[in-house]
Image (cartoon, rainbow, N blue to C red):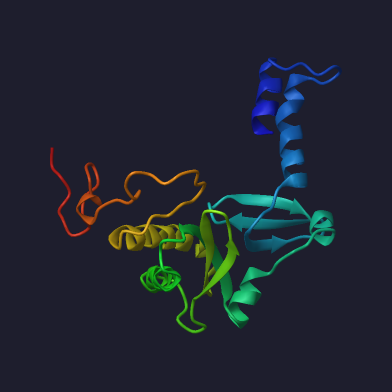
Length: 203
C-alpha cells in the first residue's frame, strides 16, 4: 500500500479526480484502518489514544477504532500468567522427536528474558508428508521485548540444531539433499562475524 501511494504521489499512477498531494494523507488514514498496532499507551484523550511502539514511534489511533476492534492487553496478560510466545520448525522424520524436543527446550533455556516458571513446552502440531511440525512455546513477562526475545530465540534454535547436526526443513522441503543443510560449529563465526569474546578488529 505504501508503494502504491508513493507512485500516486509521483504521478506514476493516476487516479481520476485524485490529486497527487492527497496521496500521503490518504495513505496514513488507510494504514490506520487496516494495520495492527502494539505499544505502550502514552496518553488517552477524548477522541484519540497515543501509543509508543516497540520501534519508538508515536502513533495516534482514533478511539472509535479501538472501541470497534479486538484489543489485547499484553501487559495485563504478562503480569498475570506470563505471555506465551511461540515459534515453529519443521524437521524430517529421520530426527528422533525426543531429540528435537530437547534441542528446542535447550534453545529456550539459553534465551534471556524468558520465564522458567511456567516452563517452556513443545507441541507437535502436524505429521506432514516429509516432516514433522514442532511448535516451541515459551513464557515472558516483558511484552515490549518480544521482538528481541524472538530474535535471540531463533538464533539459539539455529545454533542448537546446527551443533547437533539436525537439519531444519523450514520453510519448504522437496527432496533429500546429498548432505544435511547444517552449519558446522567451526563455521559459526565466518568472516565478517566475530566470536563474542574477541576484541574488535582494527584495520
